[in-house]
View 1 (cartoon, rainbow over the protein chains, first blue to last red):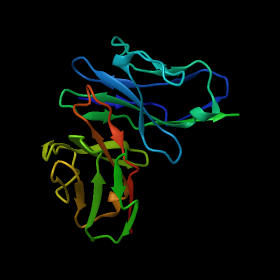
View 2 (view 1 turned 90 degrees about the vertical axis):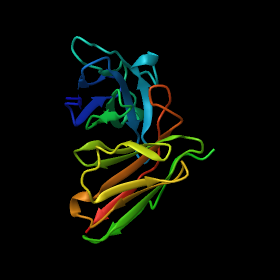
View 3 (view 1 turned 30 degrees about the vertical axis):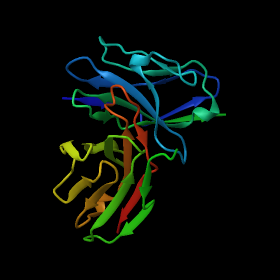
View 4 (view 1 turned 90 degrees about the horizontal axis):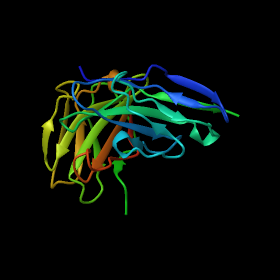
Length: 108
Length: 115
């Protein structure tokens, strides 16, 4: 089965503290994985994709095939990081499968 | 240029009525996607168009849901005999080609409330 699991519905982190949003996937084959973000009153947008190996807004995510994980990390949280984050997997039919999302709340 | 637009932004309807939701993709984008976003369920894939054809309709929840795309541009998602469980935000997205190589851009969504 093709599945993306985000175990945390809500994650509260103090400003300046490290952030880790967890994502695990189930997929037979080489997955292509993404993180999408939706800030309050804004559209859903791509944050990063694993093939580009970029750091966007200080966030990084490493694909761990052994653990079937693609956790999103940032060393120092900022208040503007508060948003809804979705992990997603692209299957071979060009269809994106999203997780249920994690709401990140940065505490002042 | 303009991004993906959707109309209406909000729709309130009575149970049993039909509704039509519209999506205008970014000009020139060949791929168009519909998703449903509901509380606690995250983003659920509904249907995908490449040009005017829909190679994957597997995500449509029931035969009350249908979608079409004409002229390789505008798409309409129709829900017949709406039920309360259809209440959600319906998102449209478009991309210039396969997502493997192209970014997917999302519209603002249509919030559907079925009373």
